[in-house]
Amino acid sequence: MAAFRDMEEVSQGLLSLLGANRAEAQHRRLLGRHEQVVERLLETQDGAEQRLREILATEKEVAQGLLDAKEQAHRGGTELQQLEAELQKASEEDSRLKASLLQLTRELEELRDIEADLERQERDVDEDTTVTIPSAVYVAQLYHRISKIEWDYECEPGMVKGINPH
Image: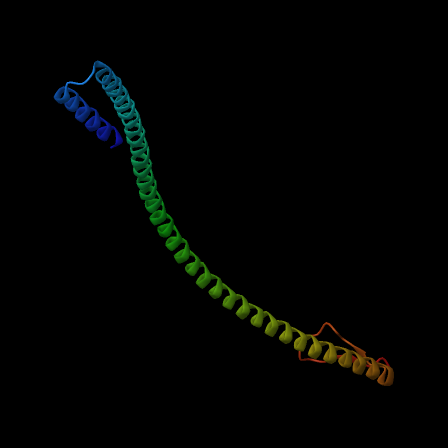
């Protein structure tokens, strides 16, 4: 803007020089001033063009960066959808496995209960057998000592055979 004001000033000076028919010195001074103004204008124009090129290059870089960011965001969105689908599948698999584990745990508990019942029944049978058999042996030995009867242990179950040697 200052350059245009200077040009206007130079132009008015030239007009006043021509109109007043002044001395040649004033004319040279104004021409030198005009050259300075033109040089400043050209320098300013070159600087403005350079800044404009820099701004355009920066805009291009920013636009490319924005496009790259949009593409990356799109890829990230696609990847996120894939991960969400995988998470859903894994969650369903986890639920299925938890249900299966719960069923197997129940079956294991039932088997443990059955095993505990069998062990208890086995102990009961062992107790009955151990109590009965020793007492039967004791009774048989007692009868043998008192009566001197010799028992036949090879007879059929439910039968008692004995021989009195006296």
